[in-house]
Each structure stands twice: as C-alpha cells, then as structure tokens.
Image 1 (spheres, rainbow, N blue to C red):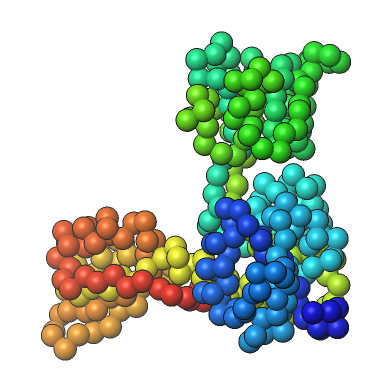
Image 2 (cartoon, one colour):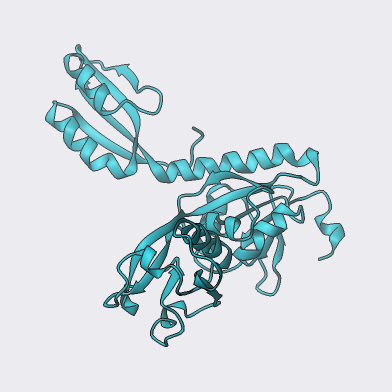
Length: 298
C-alpha cells in the first residue's frame, strides 16, 4: 500500500489496542464501515466507502487529528486534554464507552485524608499535563511557592506500585486501584471515548463524508442507549401512560380494532426499561413489549 492508494480517501484514526480498541471495532461494524485488516499493517481500506482506517496508539490520535495528518479519529476525552489538542480538534460525539475517572489516590491506611494534604508532596502519574494543571491550581490556592509546590513525576506504567516502593506520596490514575491498597481523595476528570475531527480540515470536500460517518456513529450510540417500548392501553389511562413514556419527541399512538383502546410506541432509555414496564402495568397497560435497536437516526 502506498500514498496513492490513500488519495481522495477520508483518513480515520482508530486505536490499535487498549481499552477502546474492541469497542471501536464493534462501533465501526454497527455503522456499516466494512474493512479487512491485515495483522501486519496498521492501514486498511474501507470496502464500501472512500475511507482509509489508520490504526494508531490512542495517545497519538489527538495530535494526528489536530495537526491535520488524519481527518477524524476515536480516542479518549482525557487523551485529548493530555495532548493539549482541545483547541485544535472538535469532539463531535461522546461514544458512551471507555468511561473512567481520573482520580488522585493515596495509600488506604496512610495519614493523608484529603487532596489538600497531598499538595506539596510527590505525585506520580501517567497524565503529566493534567496533573500539573490540577496541582498547579491547588498549589496556587494554598499559596505554595518554589520548593513547596507539588512534585509531579511521570511514569508510563505500574503507577500503583509507586506508593508501595516509596517513590510517591500519592498517584493520579484512571484505573481502579483498590486492589493495590489505594483510595481516591479527589476526582480530577470524568472521561470516555469520543469521536473527534480537525478544526483545520485538509480538504473541504470531505465534509459531507465526515458528516455521514458522524451520523452513522451517532445512530449506533443512540441505539445502544435506547429501546422501543410498545404496549396497549385504554384511552382513559392514556394521559398517565404518556407521562411514563413521553418518548424523545412524542409517543406514537395508533387506534386498535377494539373500541376505547390504543397502541403506544415510544423510545425509552434502556437503563430505565424495567421500571417503565412496571409502572405501565400498574396503570393497566397490556401486552408490554421491549424491542432492541440495532441502529437509528434520532
């Protein structure tokens, strides 16, 4: 494969491994972005759209997109901020997966009880930029200057062992550390996977294709979030039913062959569907059904 093969195609960066990789592959499948990837190559051509997928480390994707080397990409919101690319990229869509919290954590049975007590001490982290910004503000609030300020040390992995080895008084991490004898004293950032595009696109003629991909992905994300609830209910009880299932805009109401009864269909949040079914049954709804969505446009 050479550069001529990529000519005219939308370049779409995807995490090549890690916590986002498998979910990204499922997302691409749901959006009908068809491809076959060789194990030896980090570039592959989409078969049904003029797109080339570029498989990169998630940490590199914000810079590749922000600098215009690729057109769109999937990475973590925290990674965008850590790369300092928030002014060079636009987050088109939150993806609903890869969620985690970037937290300040300390030894569970240690003397530090609050993040303020940690200020001025040693902190190790894989998120050097975000940590420096967070503790810089905290140091300023506590009027710490010079050698009194918090010392930030970067480590690429095994962050959880730093306290045990005496390398740090606290850590800042996005992973669960309870098993390592640590506990959170502050949450710096809530993050998840995001679809991003460059604020300085290389080619204006790719905008319709970017919009197409973004709409397809938004449909997959919404389909994961919602289900369709369908049920029969008497017209007398319909006002109460509509309060329970208002839908995204309004429920669809159709008359039944039986006088005084209607069929109602509405989108409800998947996480609420059991409660919604219970409440519908309480007011007299019958034949309550839940339908999963494979894809949608909402």
